[in-house]
Amino acid sequence: MRILIRYFFRGVRLVLTPFMIAGSHLLKPKGVERDPDEQAAVDEQTRKLALYHFPACPFCIKVRRAMQRLSLDIELRNAQRPGEHRETLQREGGRVKVPCLRIEEDDGSVRWLYESDDIVAYLNRRFSVGQSDQAASERG
Image 1: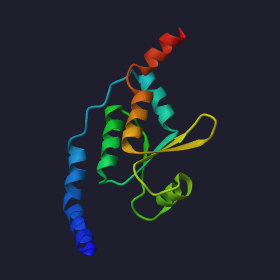
Image 2: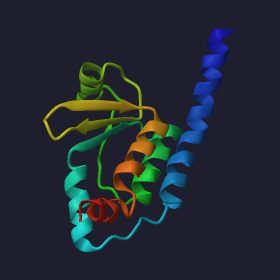
Image 3: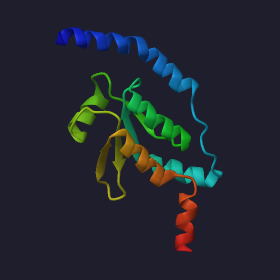
């Protein structure tokens, strides 16, 4: 019985995967528009981030859509197949589970953030439009 269930879900995944990938490309959200200097500052901050993902994973699609909505240029690392990215995720992150955001802190330490809701909340807190304006007004 177990093997039938496994093959059933593999079949469902095989059928749905192309539609999920096509849908994520066709229904891209419109990104926020920032002035060029602010976008350059955001791009500089995102160089310390990398998203480990599977292309057809619905939770990964959710995170990638949030990245698109916030106009973030975060490096995508496909960890679905055996290789460098999957091995790094296992070795340094502790487990092969996606989505996973690799965050390099200013002090050089690395933090691994799992769970799509946590990743989206982190990105919204850090990169929402108005965050830099709010921080500047608090300093000034």
